[in-house]
Length: 537
Ligand code: GDP
Image (cartoon, rainbow, N blue to C red; front, side, top):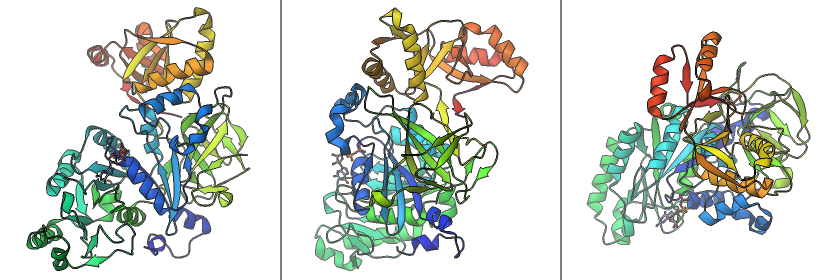
């Protein structure tokens, strides 16, 4: 494993910057609730030694009292609304794990986090197979061609037939599978995993957790360990697996057509080392990122980054925010000045937060693939590009059409102006989307997941003393409208004023009563494009 960093190198003589980039792996874990994401995360972090959990509710228990009410929602429901960044080093590689919110509700944060990773680990509960949320997250990964490594978890329990599980991945996700390991014994008789490429069995008992130090054992010996095991059946199965499995192809994996599959038990820290080794070996280095001017290579020496998440600070008396920015190129160091391309202004990065696990004191620089937290008072927005002076904007940080649209009703009409400001700030933070109807009707808010509404309500009350209710609006759907032909767009807008609103950037949005109306309007709106994803610029 120690040669991983060098085997992935393209040329032996690399610049120090290229070497830093080459040793980074930035990934997320996608799964259905309860599949074992939290347990796996903890075990992965153990490999990295000392742990620093950024923005993690669990990690900062002592600071809980100072947190505002909306964090209570999170606590009461036992969920994490906050996307966290966890960085750990293992065998010379730097792993950045971006956590996606763990609740069932879908939020835009989840999608956007996936714009900031280069690969994903898909955790599947062996007894359940592909579940709804895994599938939805997988689809987002596929849209972005994010390569997936599969971890089939809970092998220490009764599981579904393993061939059937692989078949399900292939059929429902249209994704080829290559088992890298194969479980020996099932449920209570789960003994360990067979290394498909190299042979040998790694035992659950006795050092199974560590990579490299695995205890290898011949299949014939297994009968001595567990009398229930039918050794000849195991042999036949392993022969079948070895012969019938598709060989692992790095290109197919990197293009998102094939997933290597590992089996294990996060709870018992088994198979986690293999997974980590797989991530190190196969997962891509930080990728090049498209901008509206040029493609920016990760090894480009000039610093660039984009903001994919804003987290409000926990102190309701200060409107501090942390913007999470993913580095795309160059080096970001403490104290440097960056250009915020949207405004053209320079902003000093005087106290960026680095999320290094092992030694915080040396971590005052970051490279492509790393995530830094930038404290600010509302200067930074989701989708913002930071550079060392160049003028370009990264593309591909999306806004999603809300699945729920509501009108905000204020109990105190005197506070309308304050509400307007508060909604503006909340939309800049990405808590909700705000649509202002052109006909002057009260603002509508749109969310992707219902929990976002609870968060909005709690925060408006706690931070702005604005008690609000949400009312069902006559509109249920929102689509961004655009056209190559400016005139056509103007005509469309003029003909539909009562259904047109402006989003936070002033871009026009068409509001529809339901799918039927939307379809009806679309059919008659020649030359107008309706989209449910908007690139944030
Ligand atoms: P998450 O919702 O995906 O984050 O799942 P958790 O990590 O919280 O796990 C859900 C439950 O499954 C917890 O009770 C875990 O202890 C349990 N669990 C996780 N991994 C394993 C495993 O490998 N084997 C068994 N038997 N239980 C597990």
